[in-house]
Length: 250
Image (cartoon, rainbow, N blue to C red):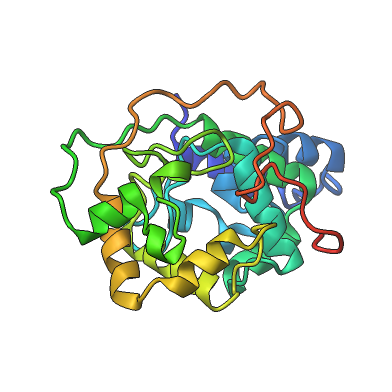
């Protein structure tokens, strides 16, 4: 099996003309870039310095801090996030630059690649009872807060392709996303559900929820087959992957 460094070298060599051989065949280069693995290794049109593996890893598990794990996440969900970065509904300087430079076909390919990578959270028991556990599992009816489990699963496994799993994500990443929702730096939830929830949570509650969710055992099952298209999946107005965005959001 070719080592990933060897595959990356193939990409770099394909991107430059060889002395005496004339310009590179663009169609051949496009065929190479069409595979999501090569986009992840090379950065595609965003360039090698922005290769996905630099933050998200070859196995798609992230860096354990600010970069999330992508392995096993739904393909349509990942593609929707790249689109949100590209059109400004998710703010993050590096990811916005990368998403804007990737062609739609490259976004689709790299999303499919990471969705196909196997992921099962490490064997662990449910975290102990705590205020964060009660808030995650039961919500807070007095504040009109639905439970996190109603969308993200009792075990943090995610419910349906559009509601992403939280198990296996870094606690720092989850806390950062709650803060981004709170300050409208993420605006890709059609009904602003996460905006309302994040603004009702105190910062200590957000931090505790992030720690709790990251420690959940998750679902050891493999991700759903990639053949299911975004159009065929169940629409859910609570999420940002399969629901129709508000007019003008795109």
